[in-house]
Image 1: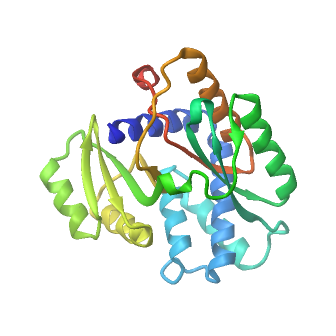
Image 2: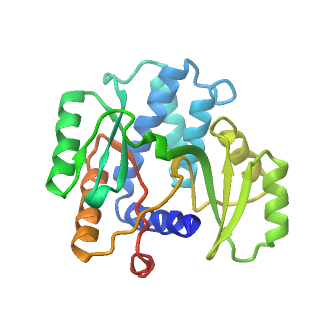
Length: 248
């Protein structure tokens, strides 16, 4: 069930990504720049955070030239903005747990925007730690099943250091420890695998349903409003999204 819900979330994100590539590229570019500056190196072999973001960028089809240019600019202190990482926790309709990861140059603006999104859509912003205990950080790599042998994929994934490999619907979901994520991505790409999605995610331990249509609509609007905010990098939640959200 959790795998199914995770994949439906990825498909929804992918559909949005296809329609808003420029915004996605901008957000990932910001992550790359911050990873270079906070990690102290433009070499992904010496900067595990940068290695992880590069893997995420490639999974989102960010061109290599873009990646190289952003890294060089950040390494040369070319960027004038200083972005700060902040995480907000709260509850959507009917107590759905939500975590919002941001990179911002103005925490007051971002906090106000995030609080407004929650309150406008039947939720409320909580205190630090109120829902984070319900999530576990994991590297999550998604590969389409078509044309691939399940035993081979599982063996390859475990061989390069993945902690688990699951089969769900029409994809394989490969899980790693956060610290191993960049290396596992690179090794799988060397073996010829292409990714639908690759990122260090906050995976919920359990999922919750929304049985009434009004709450589901409010939850969907909350996610849309948060994801459309330029300061928001990722939104994680434990809503078990309905089957209909998978369909075209």
